[in-house]
Length: 277
Image (tube, rainbow, N blue to C red; front, side, top):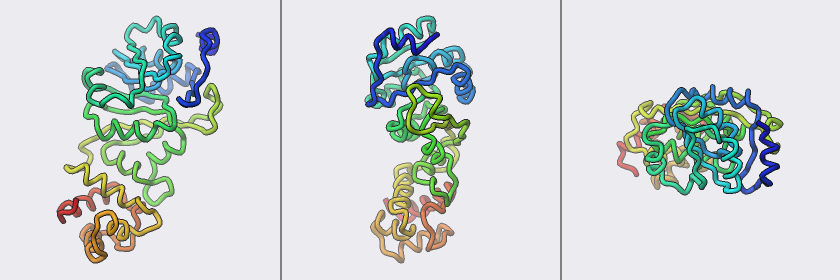
């Protein structure tokens, strides 16, 4: 199937607003599906594009629900997915849907697979990681720098709040890197595929709101020590902030980016015990 020819025949024009960069190599698309470990079940695809990845997903999943924001691709998808009877295309912006409505549409547990626009990466990840109990994993083709941030280790430049937030409830695997030359049209940056396997019982975090605040506070001002960030974020004096760190077995001169996820969980628990919100 010549995707480029179909797009041309349908008079399709790429819309920069939607960050459209399609993958058309069938072998590569199959490898990405391999990375997702799809074996039956329901798959939620975000950004169906021209349907190239959708077609490969339909061969492995029992059901594929494919969201596409660009109505100009609706006719293209009717052609490319004509033989895929287990695919349901939804034309619309998935970020305008409530998570519970998406879960209802999926009818139970599901896996997310997506080649998503770079501007959508962080909000989309956090929407599902923080708010969905039904998502089992997310396999995402995203900007290489963001993938590296998700898989980063403590005390590195890529390690940040999103690293901790995701790794506190999931296991992250960077499965492959993709040159920008593999996309049509070619973007300005390279990409990578990352799989996020949900593991919500990885740590005992009963107050997720307070845990998120603890993490965001620690990274609020990266050049500041953790003590200074806690003083500002939680409105306490230096003595109180230093005591929280000592009770967490942390050096009072440390910075947020030096803490492992486990240490963040320990710090959050001490903050919770202290009565701070």
